[in-house]
Length: 563
Ligand SMILES: *[C@@H]1O[C@H](CO)[C@@H](O)[C@H](O)[C@H]1NC(C)=O
Ligand SMILES: *[C@@H]1O[C@H](CO)[C@@H](O)[C@H](O)[C@H]1NC(C)=O
Ligand SMILES: *[C@@H]1O[C@H](CO)[C@@H](O)[C@H](O)[C@H]1NC(C)=O
Ligand SMILES: *[C@@H]1O[C@H](CO)[C@@H](O)[C@H](O)[C@H]1NC(C)=O
Ligand SMILES: [Cu+2]
Image (cartoon, rainbow, N blue to C red; front, top):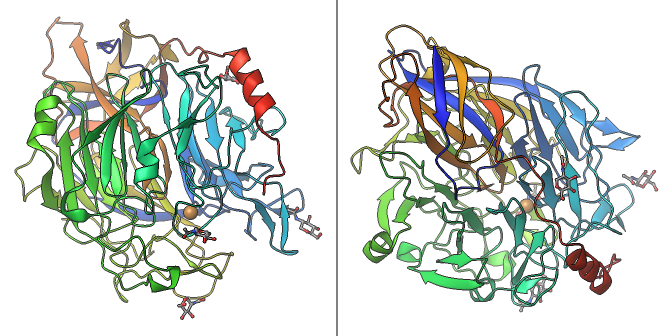
């Protein structure tokens, strides 16, 4: 049987690095399953699936068990099928960096912190202006490429976010110039920049100021930045939200987050662009869950592990009418911060990881903040959210096994190509430790939804790249009793600090060729997806490169050392 897939999103260039899952409805059986398998070698502060078989993780410089070139590694590649790791070799400190994929599939990993040689207390290669490139490979030949002389950010960033734009380049947004538990006006970097650098709005490769990041201090670390179908960006930080049009440099304010809930680090809610489907006419709708109503102007020592988190989830449809109607508020089963929202191939959203009290930070000399899970109970139970169910009946934890591993500050989660969700990390410690209530956590867990144990469709002949507006044919093998088939593109994104850069699910129009019958496209709730196949949407070409803007940026910025 052949399935033709027509990509209708001429303007939807944001989906350039995707994993495709093909779903067919059958009598989905089975249960959720949680298994602990493998060891991440370095603490999984940042996590991104980069191919059908590999994921990368980035940690901070610390005494991790995984060794490389005679020292502890702070980045690694996971081979998903074998659950093994290979050390990667960044030069600079990747502590609280961000990542997004370019249109050609190269990961742009940027920002960070001064390098601390733990054994010596030395400050070395500083990651704050680092841009690190990683081109995924299937063997062991790829590694991090960086070199601040020729490849760097315009300014120091720590706790910045990033997003892939509709021209295939990446925007790097916000952050602080120095590390601190919470941002403030002195250390704030209320600017953004492009990679590759652009000569745009008169800035010729240099950073561009943003009022939004000025107005949202203090609690605006790791803002949520989502590329929308029309190419503009949804941005939220602290208690505010806006639409940013990067082509005209216009900020349009949206209604603030309801009930005074703060949603960015250290109050760390999670935001997700809900699935774009035929049924919702591909209308973008954002959902933000968790956070905290705690004051963001307290002294560091006034923050504690006992401060309550919020259970609020708020949804806003990003159309004129939706914005006029305002945020729609509902509740998660438990209060939560440092939560991850993961798009599942069946169109539901998994809320996982995090804590019920505290703030995102750790016990250290500059930040006396301790995190708590639910007293001595196991970690917070995951909950799955059906965006189309009646309000009040959208979240369910029924049948989802509770993990015994708390996933606190510096933990991550990602959907993987086989359809399971990888849970990793948690390290609310300034340095690697096996001591205390929340030690540095290296155990990986894989949470498998029931569809994993059904008779699944299989797909072959998925092309490596598919350009916009193009139709292609692939071979599909459907289990018996399939009523309908839908095809989705999922960008698995880049997870860190509860923020999931570039995560997106778009349902595609599909037609079964044998009988020419157009299939019903409504995302089946009990659907059984195939495993995912990687496909670059677009030509796979590199983003535009403006040598003049690059030269100007290199001329006018310093290669360090920065203070
Ligand atoms: C840290 O310092 C020690 C002693 O000077 C040195 O042997 C080690 O290589 C340094 N580690 C790194 C990662 O540079
Ligand atoms: C901002 O944070 C830095 C680093 O913690 C601190 O030195 C500075 O005094 C703070 N500034 C304000 C205005 O709070
Ligand atoms: C964490 O910080 C609290 C408050 O400063 C302190 O009482 C506690 O001893 C610290 N714990 C560790 C493991 O450093
Ligand atoms: C992707 O584009 C960037 C920016 O031009 C370039 O540096 C990188 O080498 C490209 N990657 C591939 C795989 O072509
Ligand atoms: Cu961090």
